[in-house]
Amino acid sequence: MYLNRRHRDNHKEGDLHYVLLGETVSEVNGQVEGKIKEEKSGVILKLQLSGLLSDTSVLRMLIDEENAERKRYDAKEALVDKIPTGQLVIASRSDKDVSITFGDGNKAVLTLNPFRIDIYKNDRITISGNQRGLLKFEHFRQKGDGEVSFHTSL
Image 1 (cartoon, rainbow, N blue to C red):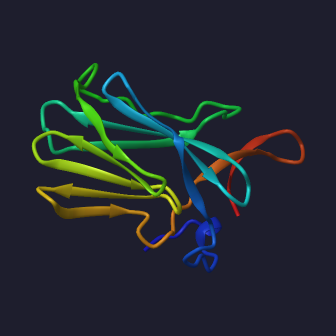
Image 2 (tube, one colour; image 1 turned 120 degrees about the vertical axis):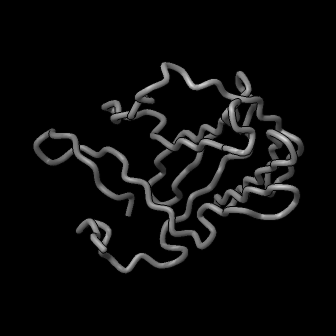
């Protein structure tokens, strides 16, 4: 297994602490958007969830920097100009989590602190993201001579 040199450190559970800011989670044009904050560095990330219309059981999650100095490369769909997205609905929210419904019997639960996403099909969990708190996101930082590069948020 190939590991990037920057990711060879002993990253343990709880080293980085990502928090989904609950007041920023909202429905926008059938998608759900929110902001995630990395507690150590204070970097704000943008979360975007969308469902695919052609397959009502697919949830697409994008995480990117909110105010990046340089736009990150975004791979576009090769064969389809624009993939039609389905409707995501915020079903409930509390001070601990936000529940989103999509498709037929599908649900996603976004835990705020620490950030975690659990996806359910007919009330049975199918996948969990950041379950052990090991999420790492490389954000842009200025090098000493003014060059922009990726570095981990340690």
